[in-house]
Image 1 (cartoon, each protein chain N blue to C red):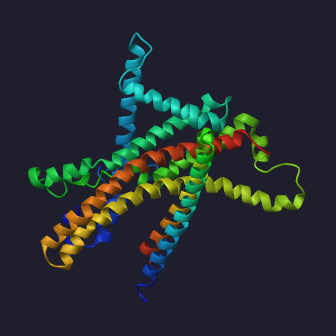
Image 2 (cartoon, one colour; image 1 turned 135 degrees about the horizontal axis):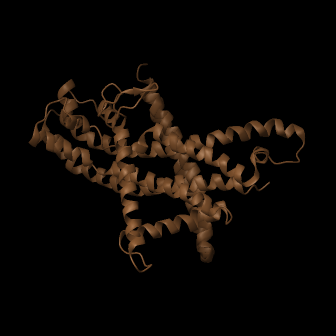
Image 3 (tube, each protein chain N blue to C red; image 1 turned 45 degrees about the horizontal axis):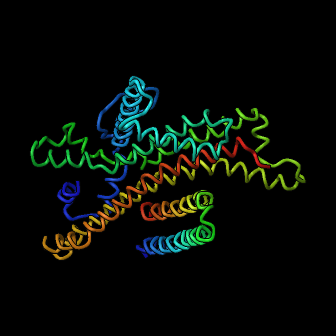
Length: 74
Length: 304
């Protein structure tokens, strides 16, 4: 029972990576596709994708901080 | 530092070493001891030291470049000023202008430029192992005693922006400037009214006002966490990969196993992550400034 929090933290970390990876993957795929369709609008598309991408990354990082807290403050 | 901890406790504790490297020095053993004024301890710990180094380096560099440029006869910048001017123009034209708008661009560009350059300098300084070099010099050449100033300094050399307090202070400035921007553009009362769209049925407001108030506080909190956690995360990754050397040499009870793992796995991976860190350092400075500009723009140009 003593190491159970490590178990939880590891699983949580895996879930975060899955979620963030899926999110970033979809974003990038959609951006690449739309740039391929309309290369003229590449700047606008990049600008529109940037902000939500950073917000997504922020959520993932927050989750990682909480996982670190689970490990440190057992 | 890794060697030192290993000797002291006998056996290698990766977690202890990594946390010791990433976290701030304890207030009870600061690098430079200063008296307590008004109930605040002014002692210089390693993050404070890096903070001051970053600030003074930035101040000297930028002032020197600008003074030199103003003194010369022709208006074309050369050398470092050229790079500086390109970055300044990029931030004004592609970060501040599209978000804040033409009317207030010159009001808020200085603040956002300061954010960008300060965060970038602090981040980059954390990547350069100056103090670890001093540590090597101290251990093998100078042999100073354990309590010397130099030996205290060895614990420096981390990213100042990896400390949550530093980023929280930066995000507080953002928080206040969001309110200041709204007040400057619309007046104090109108700014707070602008938080929620007007002309809705009253039950909606019961839901909307708490959400908007929470959003106001969550924005700087997310800024704080993002920057600090990104900076800490890279260091933790590099250090834990380098810890493999010591873990494996202890596991198999031979130095050869550790060196082998180091050459085959640790060093290439650490080099890769360090290269990634260079990108992360740039991107995080960019993200902080972009989000500050976006938030200020949100309170200046109210959509609803």
